[in-house]
Length: 539
Picture (cartoon, rainbow, N blue to C red):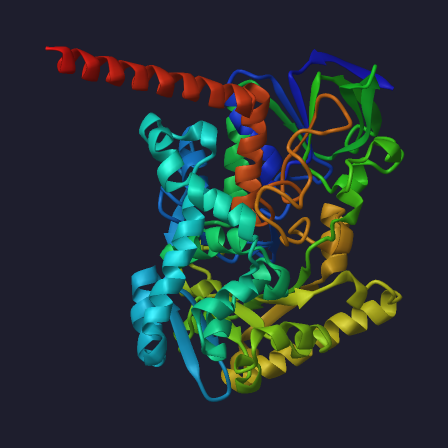
């Protein structure tokens, strides 16, 4: 065993967006950080790979981009030095939904959405306004962490945010029941929830508070990172390295070292040097599935967080990656994100639709065709006529796990061909443009991310944003913290980014200290105001 003589303040296991954001935040606050990643590149799901000169985007279809008061991610980017530095491409629409007889566009901008869908569903226009207002009220709660509120925001917090927070904690509504209160048309509900696979596979148990934060931002604006999500991951890694930290790839963490119940380091296997290495730090952040942490090798099973074994992993996705000989957007009336439904499915009540879909073969469920040629994606060279696209829908590891190698290969090919048939029904001749394709399944995701159910989303988002997940700070192991999709606020790019920032802040200055500091400032302010009022009254 080789021992690294460098000592670190924090070691982060896993270079997904949660771990990278935590590392960037800590490094900018003068902590010496080491990030260990078992893959050969950082990023987790926020990565790309090359096929015949075309960049294949692994996970980013579109990233929600909300207003500064509702989207915590925009604040995090500013705090860690990324604000204005990412090449963000604004998408022309949020998404569209197509059936055999109908086509609906959800335009960019919530006001545009209300106008457009209000014309299609005139009896629902007022309800659409109520729907957006309800999204915003919930999103405002999570627009800032309490310790990040400005003085004025903290001053009015008990008036404008605390009641909503307490109401959310008390009600704990799920998306299905909330939407049934706000909207009447099943078709409209399903159009608005076409992008549900980015969160869950059922509105019945999807936390409204989690859904509202993301969906309000999507309806405000959606963006793509030119060149692919690897640009974001590399930018976060650069921040860590430029501030004295390290990001080591191809380094597979094997054990969390402990002394007297407190973490003290990590042993890992360096795939490049083929050596086992020990590194030391008093704080460890786990940006991995907790099941892989408390596996009896990395940490004893007995130390697993209380109740965490009862939480269920979220759904997963399949993806068909496609190189097109030429851009489909030049030949077809396509949106950027095109969700393919049937009239029958679009008119089903959500309470029946999602349980029904779970019983259907993967290839018969709704799916999305993301046509990256509809924007300046940067995934192909400027002089290359080819383009990139993906077909994506919900799937679970159980659909694939018990197949042998030949059966698995055949099942992937059958899925691809069925999806191509369905795509062809809506865009005749489009399959003639396909140059090459490959299929990724939940088994693929599990291989690269090592997550239960092959999910990229962590635990199912069934509860309020502050619960139903791994804690930020371990209750059983001193010095151990969590970041990423498995902790609050949950999965997705925004969830992982916010989780990493939140965890880093907890290490730098615990929440209770920040709250005490702000409360002291508030009390001092109120005392000064009271003194001035008393002085004026005494004159």
